Length: 218
Ligand code: 5RP
Image 1 (cartoon, rainbow, N blue to C red):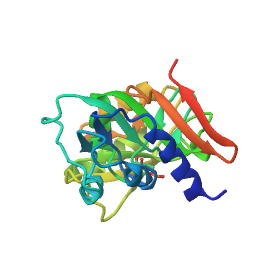
Image 2 (cartoon, rainbow, N blue to C red):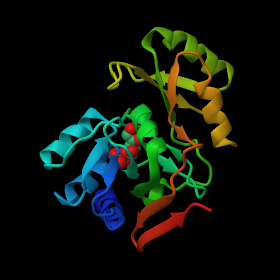
Image 3 (cartoon, helix red, strand yellow):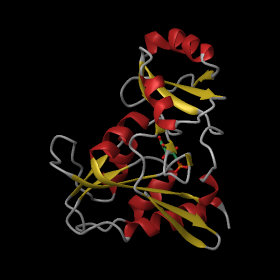
């Protein structure tokens, strides 16, 4: 089975969890794009997007777009990931939308993560950890990361929806994801680290050639 078929299968499995009349938070990326394509117009009250790209896709689908202040509650957040472990901790931000993704995921009552089963890993960190940073702090953040054993690579030319830049950090040894997340986010100039160790997913829907594998929190 090819990757795209698996991504689509994970996205379609998530549609069954969307309650009628809810306010939905919607992530960013190719797996989430399949999810948006499957959303039925009129089923939900509106959606809070995690990026400009997702906002455009929702509008194209005829779905009402809400900002976080308008949406009094976000019932469910659905998003993909670059890596996930069995404790539902994630690495996200391959598409550069990590900061808004973390904000909407944290605001949501429930977070369902959808992915191709190959993204499940024993230990997070094979995929580089994206950091959104304030551009003027790039060299200082990079030096700090090098001191702690990581190899930062600047995503040159990429500007986030917030006007930030991205450093992809390779080689981090992530034994405690929540602690690593806090340490990275404590570096002045780091806006957000792409480790979701504190706000983990509540349900992981992994598409495998044998079918959908569900991993729940706890
Ligand atoms: C974007 C993300 C994406 O969810 C992540 O990169 C996975 O993307 P895809 O579904 O295209 O594999 O975090 O910032």
